[in-house]
Image 1 (cartoon, helix red, strand yellow):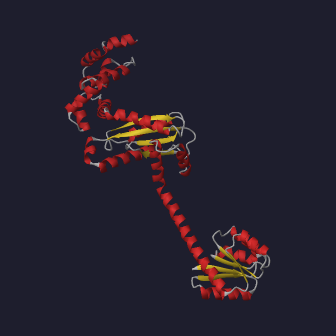
Image 2 (cartoon, helix red, strand yellow; image 1 turned 180 degrees about the horizontal axis):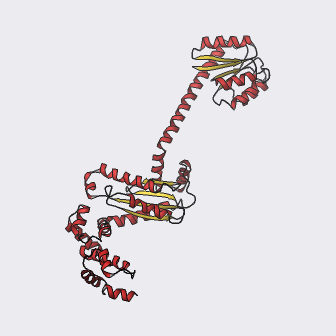
Image 3 (cartoon, one colour; image 1 turned 90 degrees about the horizontal axis):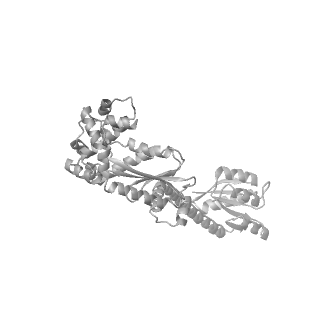
Amino acid sequence: MWKVMIADDEPKIRRGLRTTIERLRPDMKVVAEAEDGEMALALVQKETPDILMIDIRMPFLNGLELIEKINGVLSDCIIIVVSGHDEFEYARRALQLKVFEYVLKPVPQEVLTSVLARAAETLAATRRQTQYVAWARDQLERNMPLLREQFLRDWVRARLSPLEISEQLQFLGMDTTGGLAMAVIHVVERMAAAQSGERERRLALYAVRSVVEESFADFSPRWIFMDDHDDIVVLARSRGGPAWAEAAARIDARVVPSICQALIVAQAVVEDAPHGVTEAHEALSGEVSARSGHQSLVLLAQKYIDAHYRTPSLALEEVAASMQISPGYLSRLLKRETGFSFVDYLTRVRITKAMQIMNDPAVKVYEVAEAVGYQSQHYFSRAFKRVFGRSPVEYRKGST
């Protein structure tokens, strides 16, 4: 139902228009009448009519002045001037004010019928357009995260021209001023998860991504997305100092072993942002690929050894079991990638840690041995000399 309002200082004209409109157009209802311009303006603000029929000459506020004020209140109201004055200046001014139609009194029924029909068609089209724009805006808001993520993937993969990057940054409301840093995070899956299917792999990726988002929550702006290799990419404003490194370190500390075996994190400052984003991602992806392609299992073994070297009974079988691979396979990988057998690698880790502890002269040699997983000081001294070429006592004297 379209709402109609009539503004005319002649009661007879108002009654005639009301009767004719409601007889000709069942889809229209006259919701208000005004006898002067000021009353009309107040009623417009109250009733918000769809169609307003206005006389030019009215007390207090004439029709043209009223139209000027209404244009600032109702942008989509259809205004029809019904005037008893066939004057060029009035018609010209009405045209400037974008009046829908200018008709003369007395208004023939066929003219009013035609004008109202066109007004209804225009209102219906405007409403459809308004509804479509509102729907499109809602869809845009709903899909903005997806649009932003697709743009970021295209950006880092060099699929966009500099002009397209600039336009989309503006459209998506992404401010890259102030210096940017980037991290590329590769998730090393557990062996069981890798064999269990795509669903479990995706769950692990999104679990890690959630941790990443929490770790970088204090950075603004920040954008976190998955690239074409399913690596998690963080692009955020670099504030200098240790904040960025600390945020990256929190990721590894908070990812529990049940999610994945390990993370490989590569990070760098983006030079010449926004143009250097593609180059930074390419370099970091290459670093991650090199580290994960042939070292991921070895890195996992090294991480486990670093965490458990203090345990005297630590053995190849235990490390292999934690990774869900065979001891023989792990032994071959360690030998190929590090050049050492499991026992030799573990010994070197323990002796390296022992050398750090021995820098404190207050710690006795037997205490050092126990701290790095040796139950016998004698055996520790033999291992130390085999790796370092001198006994612990000789090393301590030499370093002093």
